[in-house]
Length: 377
Ligand SMILES: Cc1cc2nc3c(=O)[nH]c(=O)nc-3n(C[C@H](O)[C@H](O)[C@H](O)COP(=O)(O)OP(=O)(O)OC[C@H]3O[C@@H](n4cnc5c(N)ncnc54)[C@H](O)[C@@H]3O)c2cc1C
Image (tube, rainbow, N blue to C red; front, top):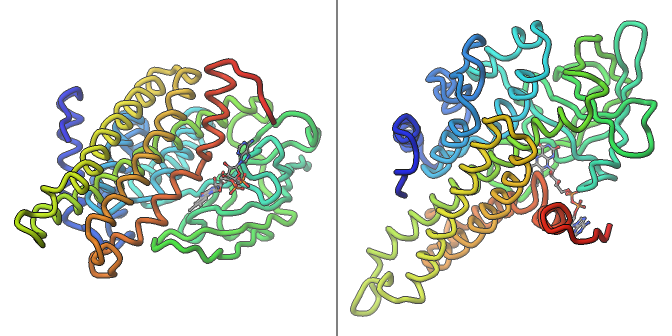
């Protein structure tokens, strides 16, 4: 991919992460790559320098995830740990919370998961019922979450709840750091058809007692704080999808140049070449929108970043699904073998279309907010 609209430092970061990713490669040891990327400063590239980060933003962090993925070694927890949790704590946390968490999130020695999805709310986050009740010395949390990634490998999970005086009406979100072994914080592994190291969990919060300083930010700031984390999540999901799409495309192109069953390699047939060319174009376009979203977010334009992050996530997920489909098809029977390892991406690529916000909810957002069309729901 050409990268010449980027500043030199970004191109250098891209090359360095790409080399690291290729060294670990497909079939990589997730924990080993995480530890090395952390030590080299890549996981905390967006976090403040005074807390051990790189002082950059989403522009840099999305490069790291994209390049690791393009090398066949994606790090899913980057979407939540440094991007959502690290950002929310840096922007809204107390000094003590920053000191407690940011250096570890930056060097990868600590990880934080993020839980918002609930079984009865799904895409409609306004309906979440995980409730935070104030006690004399802190909070009690009750509720359920579903599909939360990496809770077993995370030191804590940032849980989105609502305050007890706001059970109805629009969401008054508040965010709590819940350490993994807190009494009452249960988890059940959900078996997924995904060949990934990071697992998904259903969580139960049954009278989880938390100290007052478990609350991150202001209990009344609501959606502003939440979206400070959700926009980075969308940008990072775009990076995840673009990386995966590029990886699949690269494998297919290499195969199409070599494989010959008539008088020319299969890549000479336009039926094989054009879907690959189309995927390349669509991945490049998605990346441009991701770069725009990251630029707006890093410049402090949360509203502008919201629209661009949604569009980038949409474009990247669609490009990724199509690239993986074209790649599998290019390899013929080998596309479905374990040896070539592409068929497992068919399921994995669908994740970006569903999470963290589905394709349809982005189309709803653009219809209603950007185009001003009436809402059906
Ligand atoms: C691998 C994986 C990892 C995940 N990790 C996390 C995590 O770490 N933390 C976390 O909190 N969550 C996580 N999620 C959850 C994810 O964010 C949700 O699955 C997603 O938000 C969709 O919610 P849902 O599954 O309940 O689908 P639903 O909301 O039930 O939607 C089902 C379908 O209906 C469509 N739909 C719903 N409403 C409308 C509407 N108004 N108009 C048109 N179509 C509509 C949707 O687009 C979708 O196609 C993860 C999910 C997966 C698959």
